[in-house]
Length: 187
Length: 215
Image (cartoon, rainbow over all chains, first blue to last red; front, side):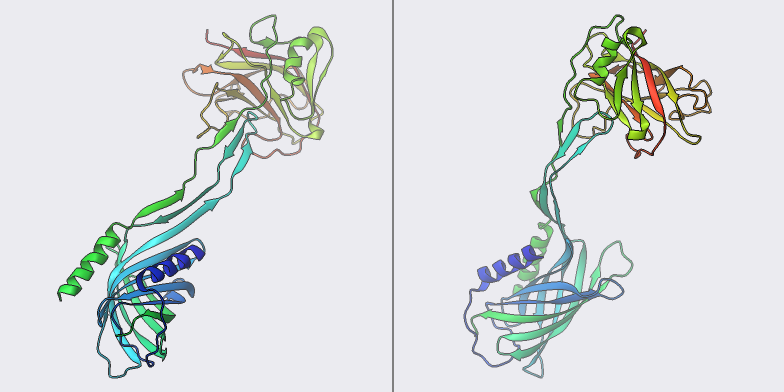
């Protein structure tokens, strides 16, 4: 989990840089702005309250790209998605739609160990290993949500997605709630 | 609209190429062989019978367990005290032509067994320079019986009488394959290489160990 968050923070730093945001509390996306958040995710009828992280890069006022993931133990999922923000009657609320793909992330590690074969007295020495496996996308992810402004650079992101795998009749519905902080220029 | 299409294409391309693995994958294990045991000259090739010959299986730094050598000359026997656990007899390094093993025979007896005790005797033919990957000890010889209904790994000898028995050992593989063997080990006790030993009673004495090659 630490590695995932470190990776997301690195992406944030690369894409946006860090500068103070002095605008009023509103959720209209601004161009060339990076937002990062952490929260919890859960699937209806499945896993509940897993750690969740998200990074969004806004390219225009209505379009952006999302990278998000959740993690439970040493495995989790990632979502790459296009993000479309619609118009809203309120400056504090920003409804949006997402469409993308979901895949899996696995972290594997093991200590070196040795075992003595009772049959012959030979000793087998197994070396240590540590690797991360990121799958190719496994399913389409379609969803939407709303962002609620809490402060000039802080908002609450509530999101729901359905994951549609080709070999699944239905798909899990995944709900997330995250506290999001924005970085970058305001236009 | 053009921006939307471009963005969707970029995300799709990124997603399609994301499958990867990074880091140190589990490597193949390495193998540390047990101490090698020097060969001793034997009167007959592949037969250890006298005290001097049987000593090569006992006093060698590689054999483990409650094993002792008693008696002199041709009357000497290897004794295993089961009250102190199981034993792994590690044989001397084989020289040609005894390196080619088909089966084996043990002359032995079990004294003082309790009513429901079972002793397991597993003879492992350790190949020369085995690959550490997927190595679990090499071919195994087990006691054989005249009756087809009796499977290997039944009690080795008559537990009530304590009589001497010439017990044949074979792989059970059809066609009597020949196994190139660097050394032989004999695991004797209440378990097998894959089954934890149960406590058993009495002592086993081995009077002769014979390896049998191709005819």
